[in-house]
Length: 216
Image 1 (cartoon, one colour):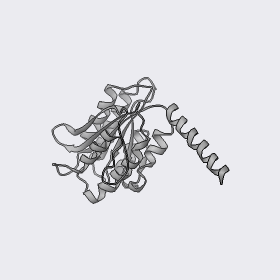
Image 2: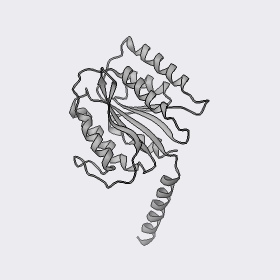
Image 3: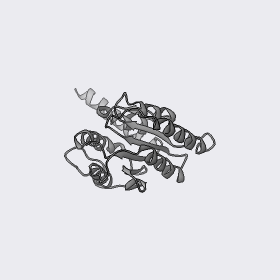
Image 4: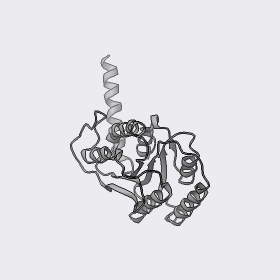
């Protein structure tokens, strides 16, 4: 039993060292608040739990859509989290206090409907304006309400493709696009394919942090 305990401690120490060595991340969480609260809250809860993997050197922001005036509503600007005491929001987890407070506001939306193309374009532009090749630069779209493919999807994909190509930063990678939503949502599948990211189902939303943030 003692040997197992020591082995666990060594593994935990190695994991902690890896967290300090990995590339820092710049992530903008972009949530569709037109989804019902019963759909959105469990995902936000999972993200809150996983957000403990963010470190002080990481830069994180939170935005919501739809917002017909500005593309999206900025809840938390993309900025270093810095050291902050943990907070337990809604009994979900203990992310850094500033991020937890921002995530708590994600369930509030004064606008109906969805306007992903405008919001996603604004989000990519936001991250690209302060692009840093030393970081993982990513937009994480949280759109858990099932949507039907429409003719406007082609325009959305073409716009995203052109935007990402124009902001590739000489092959350094540019901004990547990931998503959390229904695994068979064709719009999100196409967005994440063009954005060189992945689509995670709502019940596996924490895997974004395991696979992407902690994997570089």
